[in-house]
Image (tube, rainbow, N blue to C red; front, side, top):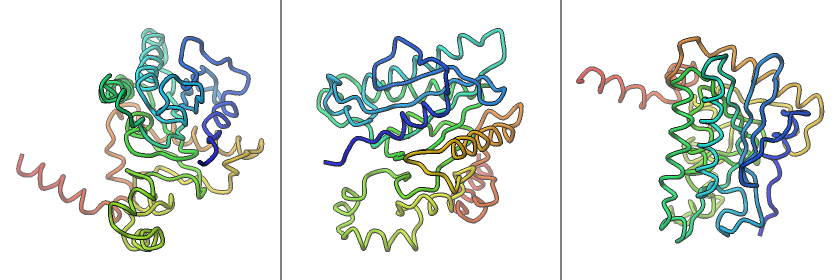
Length: 270
């Protein structure tokens, strides 16, 4: 079994600086109110908890506790800023999947993850800028629950940073291909690729941050990522509450041509 990823915690600690970790959350969900430059920011990360009572959610997966805790910390940030400036919500993403388990299904993991999605979307619609920073895996329903509702998605240019609906081994079994054949398919068919640069070709990323050590960032790396986050924040319009930028970016003009055409035809018929 592969070692537990520490990237989410590493970047959470790097970007929060000396700001305290907020209490009252499970060990697998970290939150902190910090300043990025002069911007008030609530940083949120999901991290492994080997002692979790839910064994399917011990490696950084988004499970029952994680989904509800994400919803709680995002909505708490909304409540605290009702009469003041709305802080940036920065989702630091390194999540291998949602938690697969019988207990999770029986106790409503779909409701827990939906609560997290709804909280992030509600914050965006209420005027909070939301940015996702991908520092590791962003897989399946876990990414949908934590990060995908962001105005802007940033990713580190690193081989271990990937976005997909399922892991490589599972995708190879489903498509009846070897791992090498699956990788070759991804070269000509970007949605099947596990390389973050191919995901960037689809127009969904705001920026692929290059020249950064993802595993053990230096002060220079941290400063570069902090500046990229602030630049992404500056690109969000004052009345921008939707995700239209993912279809209107220069890369999306070609990378998501079919998606754009489908939406145009639906709008014409509606």
